[in-house]
Length: 113
Image (cartoon, rainbow, N blue to C red; front, side):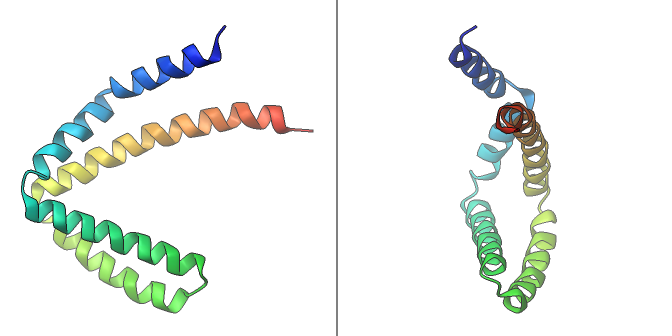
């Protein structure tokens, strides 16, 4: 068995999955509206900022920005197309997370003492 062939089959299966296709399709539709793209990208940048603050041990600053993020998220969810995109993104993320988990289990077997 050629592992690289199987990895390429997995990548093709991911590309052809309903989760990925749906997410890409909805995202393209949502981002046709420049304001949607700008707002979602701004939200994601703020998420990264909060993650960086937490990693730097700046919990107080992170907490303040998290509240702003929650408010932003509520506003974004009022836009039905953005809400659908976020829902599709979650389904895709679950699929990818499951893939990582399964691969991680196989790798751990090799790393065990």
